Image (spheres, protein in one colour):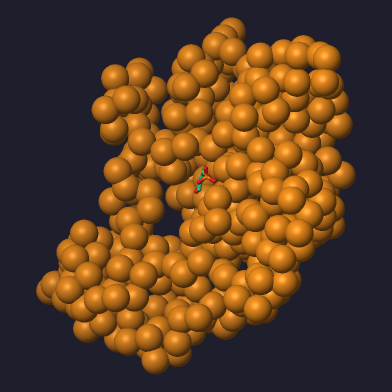
Length: 370
Ligand SMILES: *Cc1c(COP(=O)(O)O)cnc(C)c1O
C-alpha cells in the first residue's frame, strides 16, 4: 500500500545519541534543555520573534483563543481539519462558516465582512495545504473591524509570501508538528505571536497557570512538549531542507504529467515558497468522466491510498450542520471543492516508479464521455 504520507524520521543512530543525553540528564520534560534548543531552532527556521512549543497543535490553538480572551463568534472556514473548528466550539464560542476562494481553497476574504456581527471577536483562517490565505486583505478587514486573527498554519511550515515568513502575519499562527505534517515531533505544535506579552500568557496556560513555586495566577491546562519529542524535532529539522527538495521534484513530475489529463486540475501554487505539505488535485467529473469518489476507490484497489482532504465538509457534519452559517447555499465553493479534491501520496521517499504508476492509473481511469 502506498500511503498519502510517511513521517520524516531521524536515523536510529542520531536518535540514540540524543536519547542518551536526555536519559543521562534525567530531565525528561518541563522546559528542559532540548525543549529550549528546539524552540531556538524553530524561531530561526520560521523567522519569527516570539514562539512557543506545545504538546500538539490543537491544544496550542485552543490556548491561543483562550489567552486572547476571544468570545462570542469566530469566523472560520468549513474546508479544514476537524481541529480548527472544534477548538472554537470547545471554548463555547460559536464558529461562523465563511466560503472559500476557488483557487487557494482558503477562506474568501471578500465574503468575510458580511458575516461580521457585534459578537464577532476574531477570524481563524487556514492556510489550506500550504496555500497561503490572502493575508493582506484579511489583516486589513481585521484592523477595520477591530478583530483578532489567528492563522491555522498547520500545513504551512516554512512557507513564505511577499518574502515574509508566514508566521509573521496576524496576531498568532499555529503550526502542527503531528507525524503526518511536513515537520514532526511525533505529536506537537507551536504558536508564533506578534505580541510577546501574549506569548507569556499562553505559556502560563500551557503550564497549569503556575507562575512560580508560590504563585498560581490563572486557570491553566497542561500542554507541554517533552524532551523526547523535542529531540525528534531537533533531528527532523536537520532533514527538512532535503525533504523539501525531494518533494519539489516529485511535485514537478506530478504537475507535468497530471496537467495534461482532461478533467484534472493541479494546485494553483500561491506562495513564493510553498510548504509542500500536500499534493491536492481536483477532479471535474464532467470532463474526467468519473467522480472523485470513483477515482479514490479505484486507486485504493491498486494499493494507492489517496485522501479526500477535506471531506466531509465540517459544515455538513453533525456538530455544526444546524448552524445558520452551515447552510449549503452560503458555502457553494466549499461544498463543490470538498466533492472534487483528492490528495495524492506525497513524501520524500516516494519512488519515481511509484509516482509514474500513480499518474498512469489516473490517466487510464479517465473515461471521456462524448
Ligand atoms: C493537523 C491539523 C491540526 C491539528 O494539529 P494536531 O497537532 O494534530 O493537534 C489543526 N488544523 C489543521 C488544518 C491540521 O491539518
